[in-house]
Length: 264
Image 1: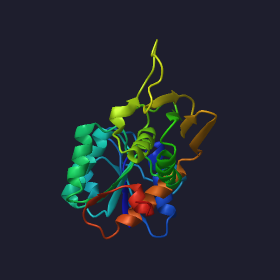
Image 2 (image 1 turned 90 degrees about the vertical axis):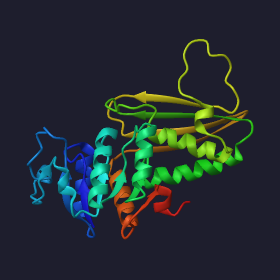
Image 3 (image 1 turned 45 degrees about the vertical axis):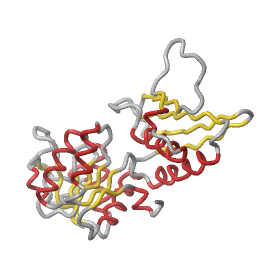
Image 4 (image 1 turned 180 degrees about the vertical axis):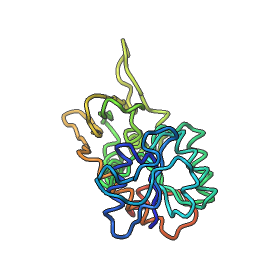
């Protein structure tokens, strides 16, 4: 697989580059970063003390000839890459979060021309948790209040996390409801009693926490909690490679990690 990496000089970009060069079935084909970055023109694996021969570039023409790009950047950057991928026939793995409705629509439209795996979280474990939550919500659908608590590092710019939102969607899928109709995004002041059938969200930010998520089903006399804690970003890189392998040979379509893992 000829793989391009977006955001090549960032923490996640470097983790992805390291995973790609270690994979026997993958080749680092291109590395991208924003124009003006100090990394432009440097070797993509210099941080590992190695020379790959792949120089970090800002010109999206570097994508020409790649099989797939893995993109964990920001919505505005990902949408620019989306346009280039359609032009060059490059499939996409999108781990970027924080898209607005128009951004999500653009990704969906592009999937008619290229194959895309997009997910709030590329971790294999997290996507298994999504499935467990569907099961739990189907059983604990009467007499249980649902709250979702997540914590991330202090540099994260969106809240609640995309993974927390996806966990809420897993619960409401089992309830046959839309998350937007039952979500309580914040609480402040005299809020009154908790309304049945709602899902409360709490977002914590601090330190270097990679990602902790807990969904609480609180009933009378018992509480069930489903938790996932990430201790290393390599889980996202390995999940992304699994998604890239899934897309091999596909020319169009919009998929998620449950498709990749056979959980749908």
